[in-house]
Amino acid sequence: MATTPFLRNKYWVLRHGKSIPNEKGLIVSSLENGTRREYQLASEGVDQALLAGELFLKELNENNIPLENVRICYSPFSRTTHTAEVVASVLNLPFEGPQCKVMEDLRERFFGPSFELLSHDKYPEIWALDEKDPFMRPEGGESVNDVVSRLATAMAAMELEFQGCAILVVSHGDPLQILQTLLNAVKQVTEPNCDNLASRIETVRVHNILSQHRKNALLTGELRSVVQ
Image (cartoon, rainbow, N blue to C red):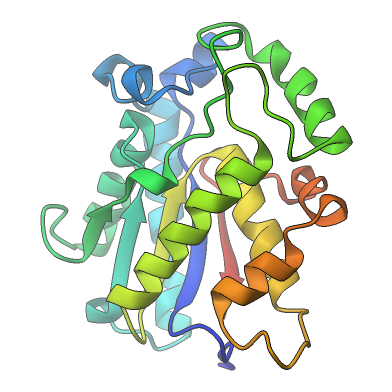
């Protein structure tokens, strides 16, 4: 399998399984609310996480990747922690062990107090703003560009800590849309002075790329290979 030369690892992304907030149609995006136990996976989401784990295991086997080379990096929210724990159980990896790592920079995008705990029918308002200006914050919340900053930090940390690993990033809809948009764009960078991930991310941190993150939307429990 060909490897992207500016990265030391291979990456998959997994959006958490269907959560209790998903079932209730609620936006739960603050760290304080998101880490509450009552906002973990719904029973359907557990089933989705099990299927995602089995699919990931199949892909690892097809690519001859040993389990000792697998790392699961996940958001601290209840729904992502629950998802990562289910996947780890499918892979027979100890969740409290060194192969599973919680990373706060992978947390959900905070949409701001004017959206928190309200109906998810309000999401299109945010995405319309993103398309118009990905550098503009919803009131009190994070812009697409703000999420890029912490995803860049998360990627740098994973690249520094791990080498030659298959990394499963378990996160949320918006952060994973944005991460895929970034990684798909950095693969296309050809400037000779952009020979590392940080410089490539800065090159693609522009309106016409960041405003299109919705094109990389994931369903709940959807697994996707992003960088090989």
